[in-house]
Length: 87
Image 1 (tube, rainbow, N blue to C red):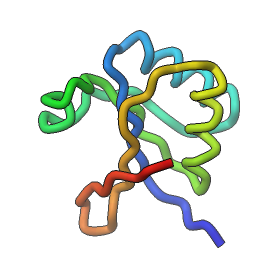
Image 2 (tube, one colour):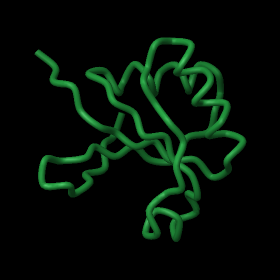
Image 3 (cartoon, rainbow, N blue to C red):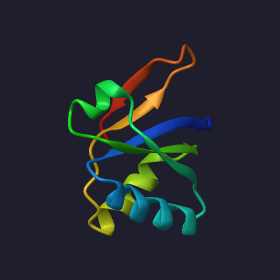
Image 4 (cartoon, rainbow, N blue to C red):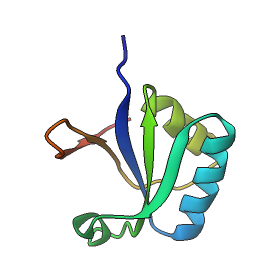
């Protein structure tokens, strides 16, 4: 059984993040664009989508089907730390 969590999907530009937000919102995901945390931005990812879902892999599949170039995917742990996921 999956548990709802908070995930961050990073993008190199606000344009890609906006396209991703529109796509995922139409698909029923709750998400919003935000500036990436400083350490993420240093790796070339200036914007991210904050996504609350039980199925982060489904969101990633939709983004890839639309050929949106995503950066990395992170899961926010209960202690507020972030863990990179490979999806």
